[in-house]
Image (cartoon, rainbow, N blue to C red; front, side):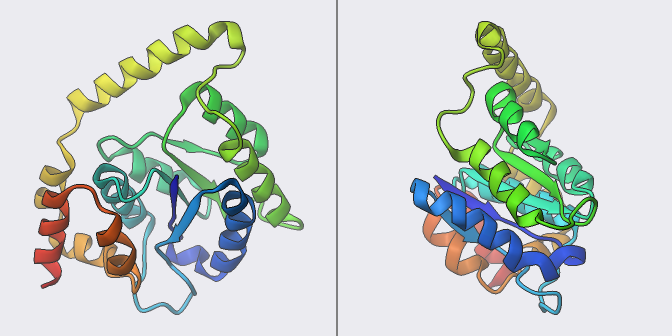
Length: 212
């Protein structure tokens, strides 16, 4: 599985802490971690939580990523922005129990985490435990197990509801503020990571045209 990591500007100084915690857990499990930034507080390409959501939509709808880990000060802004995108189902995850229940009940494809609120002593251990609950074993099995079938049904209903309520991602890219879009894909490693892994040529072509 390709896991994309996206950090916004107010928490960019913690980027290496989050990245190390994620790779410590995900890499031994056979997952690839693609860090789309920010990488440091003084990065030239600055990401807001709104851009985090837009970038999450691009990565997941194009197939360049299978799962997105993002966040901001509280995690709420990034969660809201991500859930505004078609095909993105993002949960606010604060502790390992949240991660377990989100994985088993909701089986979404993105999480937003608080990287300021409650981010104190041993925060990296909490993150490792969260990532372990998310990426070890099979997700979507239900909890409690006897409710697995109805939970799977509800996930399908939610996907249908979101599909009816949202435009497709290419339409979103064409309609969104183009300066916002250009800023969201301006990271120094975006092209290096995105284009080789993108499975949607229409999305790739549109983004290439913006930066040509």
